[in-house]
Image (cartoon, rainbow, N blue to C red):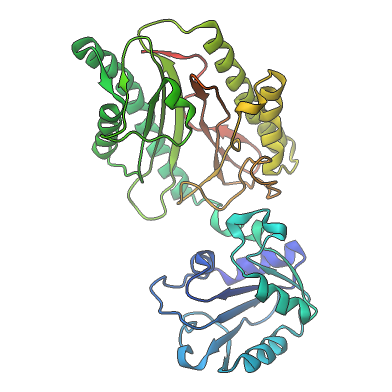
Length: 389
C-alpha cells in the first residue's frame, strides 16, 4: 500500500477519508489496494480508515484482531455490534466526506462492494458517503512502465499469430475442404502457449450467425465448420504469465473464399467508422488537455451506428478497461449498460470495440488504446477492411 499516494489522491479529490470495509472477502478491491493477503481467514467485519491527513485507523473484532496488523495505524477492538457502532462513530468523528466502494444507484457496479445496510448505518451517523470509483481507477487501472511493456509484448505476439492463423486457415480449408470453429480456436490457443503467453479462455472463433453472439465460444460439442462462403469473426486475448502483466484483446472479421457482399461492406464500414469516432474523440481530449469520461467515448461510437440505422444491433458497451485483469477496474467506454462517469486516466489501457450484430452475421472491430498525460494511441494493428481468407 502506498499511503502517501492515497492521501494525496484524497486531498486532490476534496475527500476527508477513504473507509475500507470487509466481511468474508466481499471486497477484493480493498485487499488489492491495501496489499492484504487474499488468504486471510476473515469471518468478522473489519474497517480500515485512511484520512486525507494523519494516521490511519483500524477497527477489528477481538477474535480476529491481527488481521490488519500488516497495515499502519492505531487499532481499536470490538466484540458486540453496539461496540462496533460506537467505535466506528468515534473513529469517523473528524471526517464528513468519506469515500467507500459504493456507487449511487449501483451505476458503476464494478466498485459497488459495500452493502446497503452499512451505508445506511454511516448515513445515520451523519456521514456523506461518496463513490471511490475514480480512486479505485487511479490505484487499480493506472499502469506501471513494466505493465505497459508487457502489453506490447502480448500485442506483437497476438498480431503475428492472428495473421499466421488466417494464412493457415486458408491452407487447411484448401486441404480438407472445411475446418471447424473449435479446430481453429484450439490452434490459436496452442499458438498463444508457443508465444509464451497465457489466456483465460477462448478465443471466440465464429462463423455466420454465430458471429452475432458476441461471447460465443466454440466447443467440441458445439462447433460449426469454417468453409468457403462463410463470414468469420475472431476475438482473441492473452498476456504474459507474470503476475500483474497487462492483457491485449482484439477482434477481427473477414470472409472466406470470396469477396464480401455489399451489406457486409456497409456493416463493416459502419463499425469501423464508430471505432474511429471513439478513437478520435479520446485522442482529441487528451491532446487538448480536456478530461473525458467513459460514457463520452461510448456516445461518439454509438452515434455513428445509430446514424447508419443499426442502433438496435449494437447491444453492448463500446469498450472496457484493460489491466492485470482483462476487464479491469478503470473507466469503461459505456453509456449503455452503465452511465460510466469515471474519467479515462493517463497511463491506462482499454479496448474500443463497437459492433453490429445482425441475425445472419455480426461485425466487431476491436483495438486497444494506451493513454499518456498528453496523448492516446492505438497499440496494435488496425483493421481497415474485411480480411479475405
